[in-house]
Image 1 (cartoon, rainbow, N blue to C red):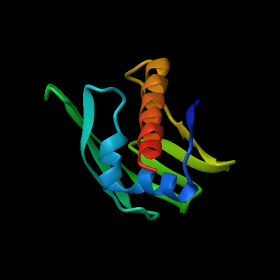
Image 2: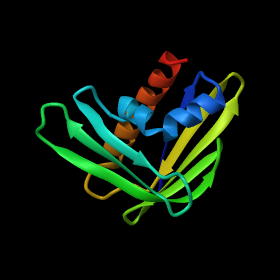
Image 3: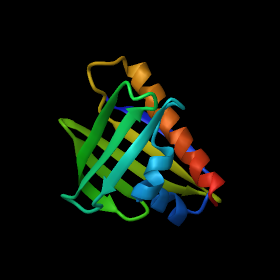
Image 4: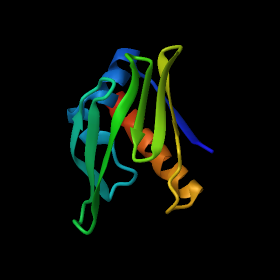
Length: 135
């Protein structure tokens, strides 16, 4: 079973793509709630390249690294990556003046599926809000 979340971003494809893959942008949108933030991010966007981001509670009480390896990259269309024993696909599909960003991922076993769906949906909502605000 995979969890699928998506959002529609009202911006050109090139802008949406760059905001998704640029570390300086990722630290601005990669959080599921206002009390969390991403303190650093790295991206080596090529098959076999690695990525990582450090997510922390703003009060300093907890943090974790999210990292993986890119397994497929089609510029401005598709990113696939493995993180641990799980996989994720991110699709970028033009839709009129906007771009549909669809994320499909293998759930982990520690948290309920609905909680994971809510978290990733919130991150995508932050992504859309960030990109649209920086047009």
